[in-house]
Length: 301
Image (cartoon, rainbow, N blue to C red; front, side, top):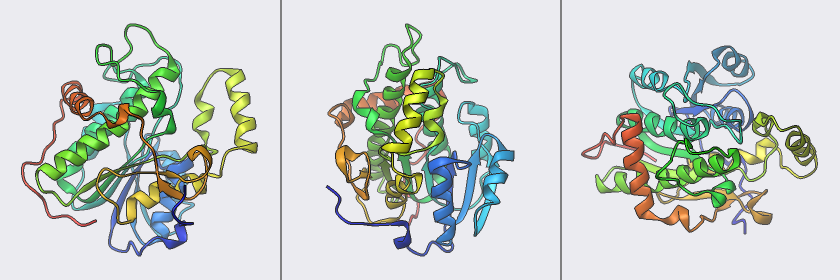
C-alpha cells in the first residue's frame, strides 16, 4: 500500500549536486534526468548513442551534458569511469534491455545479464571512489521469476529470453543488498538503493522481436500501463528521500504495477545474503572489477 502521494514536484533542491543517469535518452531514464535537472542538479546523460543523447538533452531545462557509455562493453565502462573527475552525488543505474533474442556483449556475456547487471556492477565499483551520496539501481517485479544460474550465469547451456531477464533483475537486487552491506562494513556514508517502475509505458517493451508479444504489449501500454512520468517516481524517490541503505521502492498500487512510491516487496531469492555474496564474487571475476573502498570516503545523502 502506498504511504503517500509523493510526486516529482516534491523533489528537494538539488542545486550543486551531480547526477549520472544511464540510459537517459528515452523512457524512464529521460524522465529521471529531466526531473533531476529541473530540481537544479547537473545531470549527465550516460548513453550508448550520443547523437540520440544530445537530442534528448536538448529537450531538457537545466544543466546537462551527454557522455558515451556502452554497458555492453567493459572497455567503454572503464573509459567512462577513467574520464570522471570530481564528486558524483547520485548514480542511477537505469539502462536495461528486456526479453531480447540471444546476443552477446563485447566481452562475451549474455546480453541481458551483461547490460542490466555486469555493466552496472563494473560502472558502480569503478566510480565508487567519486560517489558521495547514493547508488540507485532499477530492478523489476520480474525479479520474482528470476533464479541465479550460478553454474551457467551466461546461458551457454541454453537461452530463454524471459528467464535471462528475470535473472538479470534478481541480480540487480542482490547487487544492491551486497553493495549496501559492503558500504556499511567500511563505515561509508554512501548508500545503496533499488527501485522498480511497476508496469510503465516505455519503449523497453518494444525490444522484443516476437510479433504477438509486441502487439500485446502495445495494447497493454495503452490500456493498463501507467505513464513513464509515474514509472520514474520510485527511482526519483530512492535517489532523493531519506531511506535506509538497501531500501527497495516501487509503485504502491495494485500488485505494485502502478501508483505512487512505496516500499516494494522482494522475493525470497532476493533476500538470500549468501547468494548476494556469491554473485558479487562471480561478478568481480567476470568483469575484473572489485569493490574499491577500504575506508570510508566522505559522503552526503
